[in-house]
Amino acid sequence: MIHVLLSISGKDRAGIVRDVAESLVNIQANIEDSSMTALRGRFTMMLIVHLNDASDMGELKATLAELEQRTALTVQSQVLSEDEVQHLSPEPDCVITVSGADQAGIVYAVSDVLADVGASIVDVSTQVRSTDGGDIYMMALEAVSQGRSELLTSRLQDTARQLGVEIQLHDLASDIL
Image (cartoon, rainbow, N blue to C red; front, side):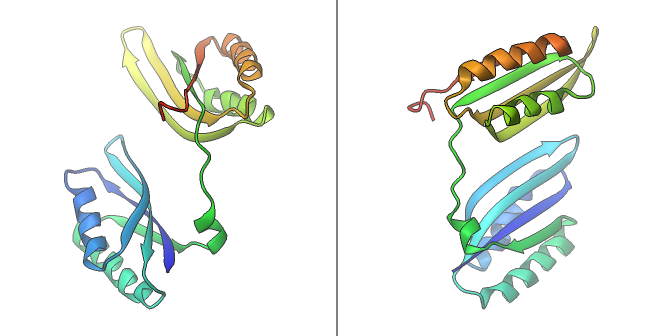
């Protein structure tokens, strides 16, 4: 069995997920993990697919080339090592939300605090929204706090004051996940 990471992007439109899934099911490639989003009219997805054996790689490459031609999507593929396949992503135990006036450095400041306390970011989503009062920046991070949520909360509040934004840490109960 072989696992492949696919990175696919292009102009957003209805039917992209269907087109990709159809191409993969036609060669019996199984989608195991995925993350997809649309940003400012662009769509991007990352998928981990598995093939039954290495001989299927040629068929996958041909299928992906046909998909690019037919849909104008850009596709990159990378075979994963056995260590990468076995690696399980940690389950987040908190969500951190940030909101306030848009400014350069928010992502850096918040991620720097998390790195300093040994917390791992599992997922990040950011967005700028225009309002009558100016641009508002919003960010949500799923993280693994490593049992350091009190220290993390304290450090994030210091960062919030320095940036003039609101930052909140929300603990997730394991039964919610």
